[in-house]
Length: 380
Image (tube, rainbow, N blue to C red; front, side, top):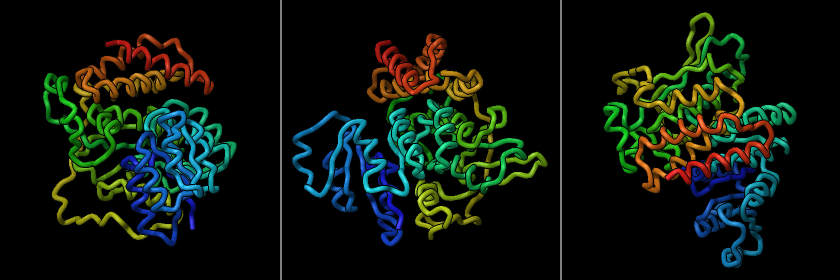
C-alpha cells in the first residue's frame, strides 16, 4: 500500500486524487492533507480518509480551528503546515496541487527527502527549475507531472533518452476565446473566461488557459522536466483535447498519447506507476470521434504565449518575473479589478520593468516574486 500526502486537498486536483484513493482503498492510504483556507472541509476529509496530519496554509495560526481537531490528528499552519505534510507519516508520494509559487518549498522539501513527487504545480518549475533539477539529480527522486499534456509527453518518452527527439508537441484546447475577435477578447468577463470548453479545473489555471499563459508555463516546465531546449518545444491547437501531446523523433516518426478529458488519468498514472491501474475515467470510443483538427496558435490574439516563449529564451529570472506578474494579474482579474486584456498588459509591463532582477538562489526567487507582485497589485 502506498502512502500519499495531498497538498491542496480541497482544490480540483486534490479532490480528484481523493476520488482515486477512495476507489483503490487496498492500494493507497492518506498520511497528510493541506488546504489554503477551507479548514472545516479539510478536517472532514482528514477524518474520512484517516489522515494523521493536516495543514491549514493560508494563516499563521488559528486556535479556534485547532480546538476542533481531534487529538489523534496533528495540525500545522502556514508554510510549516506545507513542509511538515511532506514528512508526516513518511509518505511514499507527495502530490503537490497548491497554486502558484507556493508549490516550490514543498517540492524542494520532498526532493531533499528523496520522496517521489506527483507535481500538479507548474509554477514551481517555472520559477525554480534550475534548483529543482539540481535537487532531483542529487536525490534521484522521481517527479511525475500531474498535467494532461506533460503526463502525455512522459508516457510517450517511456523512459527513453531525449537525444533522438526532433521536438515535443504540446496540444492546446484553444480555450473559450478561440473563435472570438481580438477586440472582444480584451473585455471578456470572469464568467466567460472560466467557461473552458473541455476541462473542469481551478479558477487560476482556467484563466491561464483562456490567455494561453497555461501553455506558456507548460513550455517552460517541459524544458526543465525533460531537459529539452526551448527551440524543440512546439504548441499546436487541438480543439478536441483527445490527443494530449506528442513527441517527434529525428526520423519524422510521431508518437502521441490519447485519452479522455479527465485529469484523474494523469493522477492515477502518477500514483500507480510503474503499474497501470484499471481505468476510472472510461475509454475513448473511436467510431464516435468524427475529426481531429489542428491549428497554429494565434500569438496576436493570445500574446501571453509569446511572452512565455520570450521569457524562456531570455533565461535568468525572466520566467520568474513573468510568472509573478501573471499570478498577481489573474488575482486582480478574478476580483474584477482589471479587464481580461489587462492581464497581458501587466505581464508585459513587469517583464520590461524588472529585467534586472535576479533569481538564482531561493532567497532571490522569493524576493523577486514579492517585488513583482507588489508592483502589479499597486498598479491600479
